Length: 166
Image (cartoon, rainbow, N blue to C red; front, side, top):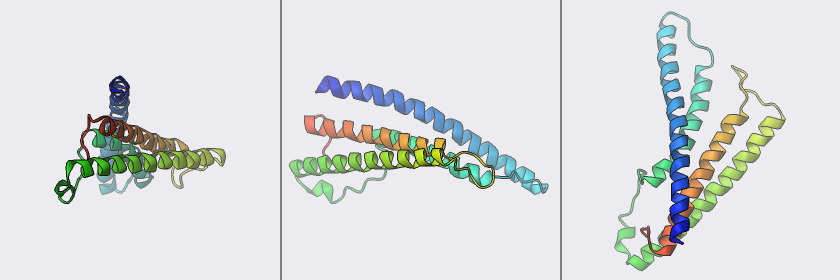
């Protein structure tokens, strides 16, 4: 079990590094676009579709950052109540938490993939710039799939006694 967890963690780390690099690229693009739009707006030449691109790029950034945030435990955790329970109860709650989280994000990945496929089939385009939507929806689906992988690894760690309970 330890070898499987180690392999999955290495694979997850590589995947997360790739996703974070892509998210970083989109974040720099967003900042450049926002700055350019502010400057050009001051001389009455705003960039068309800025709001649209910010939304699409933001979806990619947020979904690609989810798994890394979970891996590094940089999310907000309110565990004042949980810490009052015995270790065994915290472990059971941890297993339930990771199981529910994995299931939720697998369902979200599946449904967003279906949505992306539908948008691809009907050739849905954005309103202002006429950009195809489905690649951005597929990115959100991938982000959900990768956080599901991270949560599953954390579940396996708790079940094997390696990870923390809750």
